[in-house]
Image 1 (spheres, rainbow over the protein chains, first blue to last red):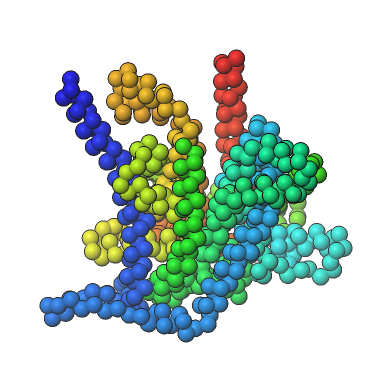
Image 2: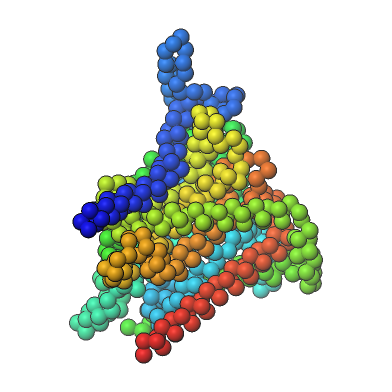
Length: 304
Length: 272
């Protein structure tokens, strides 16, 4: 009998190892390893070949020849266009994160204060748009914001303006698109946090004479810090690399890093330069991603 | 104490209008008979006919559904394994790494994932001679990978809340861990598996950036097709497609909500 349980135990240990190994290996191979290759190709030279870059390691005269090329980074630092694109992207991400927080916080608060059965319905209503196509929802804004689009027609009919406003192909359109697409990502973690709050804390503070705004700033807001961080990171980080929204709503002169990378890769076929751009973006995002991961792990441990 | 709640209600309904009015405009203008999407010229359903007659677009729809189906399957399988590892095994070597590998794809910009995966596939072809060609297969790998991250979040949040005593009871009665998992845990977390599957499925159906990087000749998925048409300007056919997508998603959501509500009521009834 003892033998059997021991064998079973060994079996279980063995099984456990597989359960851990399969997803870890898949993600290592298809998510982590590719970054090392980006790192490698960022130090290669663009070449007219298939694939269009030079090899880092070559065999010549029976010896390995390591060819590290820093030209991409020197090129990036010399042309102000790239720096501007990075700064624009960071600015765009910061402003849209703030706008999402401004609109998303009251919305999440409203849902968290509703009756439990209503909460489910309201959450579904928030999530439903994001299950339809993201691309098509951005497309909808083209029809609305065009110079002869729905918004301008409505404003002119109402007599608010007599010349159509130029909104499409400006930064305003990009901000509208980003806030529209990313709002649910802000609301969900905020709601998940706010719904756990103990309401008796607020009541206690009010019994002690605090006004609503005071108890909000001193209790609810600080307590929701984790939700704010999670929501902000879920918006900020992907928006830094956003390509589709600036491309469709921002017009040709909106200069953001996602678009520059895309153009270097697809239009100029300069894979090494695109890799260097991606590498720098990755370094910029390292800190926010670390922040996000730390928060996630905290939530993970708390919930147990 | 009341007024601020009223403020948040106002913001909520304002936000809802912001989320839904653009979608409503898509639906209304899909029935417009004019080619100019925003000039109203009377009701018509002709764009739906044109949509179904567009063979390129229809082929892309089927390709996308196929890729999304297999990506979602893979993502849920890997997601279950990762969730079990993260929520059930306590501390183990590599836990923190698995954690990062699951969390990072949630926020990583698409252009970075797409570029890096493409470079991986190109290098693999170079060194191993495999994959021979990029196409639906490589898109499947890419979508399964980020799908796994989302599936893990959904499944593990359910696994965390699960009452472990059921599993312990099964094991006391002599079930092996695998048997206890399949017969006890899996049925309980089934709703989470379904929502993880649907999430991975819709994410795959929606991705244009990563697919553009890793796709190859002849493997245009629906979003790639839509994107190239949208770049040229508005087209009523896309409005018709959008309306159908919105309709399907709303129906699925409604049915899911109705089923879960019925179950909740039944549970309540059973308890009382």
